[in-house]
Amino acid sequence: MAARPAEVKTEGLLRGASALLAAAAALLVGLNTQTETVLLIRKKATVKDVQALWVLAVTAAAAAGYHLLQLFKCFWPSPGFASSSTRAART
Image (cartoon, rainbow, N blue to C red):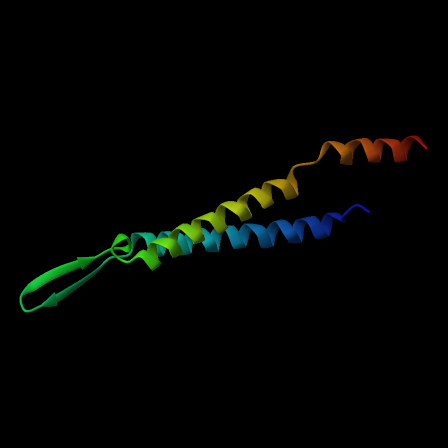
């Protein structure tokens, strides 16, 4: 059974929002730095200093890529879809 156009549009909107939010999270975590001063010594911490933050940034970027691929899949017509609608029109 084929999906209705409204369902495809809603799924595309949700996938696009998910991809945008995951990409924003990856950028915020990946580009964030913090500077701390302890006894007149400044130490700058980045995402590569803490392994867990690096894993979080990579995971968020992978999630954004997955949602982007699913968004393209949502709007890209499959070859079987066109042929089935053509067959239905002929019968």
